[in-house]
Image (cartoon, helix red, strand yellow):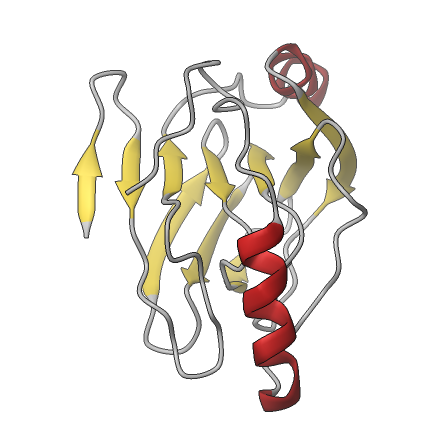
Amino acid sequence: MHEHRKDGAELLFLPAGADIPNNPRLPVLLHRGAVPPGAPEAAEALLRGHGWRPAWRNGIYTWHHYHSNAHEALAIVAGEVRVMLGGDGGVVLDLVAGDVAVLPAGTGHRNLGASEDLLVVGAYPEGAAPPDQLHGAPDERLRAERSIAATPDPARDPVTGAAYPSR
């Protein structure tokens, strides 16, 4: 299901996949043009100002993975990337410098191709546990579903500071 908020954010509710659980209650938030291209410090300041801790600068892995115990914001500060969200058969998005994708715990993500200059700032809500990294193996599913359910909802949208929406 795909919705738009008044503030322009796109909400993507992803169903559980065969290998990737996704999040049964919280949507992916997609903010287009939310951070200044080429300015990782500005992206980090915006996220930090809304209670999300910038944790790394890098790219996005080229294999499906997800975090069962942490929500993650991906701010594209340079370049462009095509990502698949939700596991095989999921949603494919083209993200460009300035875009921010906010992935609730359990959301599969994978880099399907990127420009050489891709730079992403990754952030997690303040107080979040160090993120695990799962890949959709059958033996991790039950533990992952329990961990997703036990992960506190983000207090705020890291881009707008508004309350994080749920179903």
